[in-house]
Image (cartoon, rainbow, N blue to C red; front, side, top):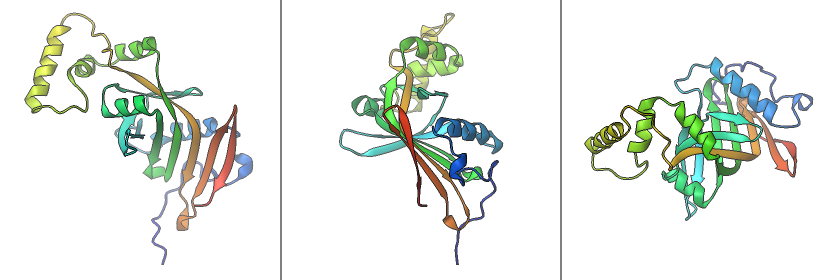
Length: 213
């Protein structure tokens, strides 16, 4: 007997079923699904999984917050000296995964990552809560520390350093943009006969194909 779980109907239950309804570019579909994600309660509606590889080819993945997106790419912010920052500096190929269990949907996105221009990162950093700004100076992200007290001490030092003045962006912290060359949209269906639509960039255009589930 098929053990597939019951799937709740997505906001548009016909999404991906008919080729004539599919856009030529993946971006309209991404925008639609991204807007509809908030119909399912989540603590971090902007959370996506970022996968990178190190210089030995070993993959690693973690959750990041997708803060901006447009036709140029998808943007997140981090410490450039963190594990993901170091790995992306050595190998800019990366993948993002958006997953919404309540909608039985996921989007897989692959591409190359680049740093944002410093003024763009400056503007974003200036809008962060002060405590988060201080934390960006205090945390040597991904590096070992003696204990929690050592982190608290680093926070106190950074807070004192910037007392009574704006906190500038650390030079090792900023934005990264993934410029996608592939999207795969996955819509869960009964009996595991899911819809999978993949877009791949070919020169200035997008090539679309349906994949077997």
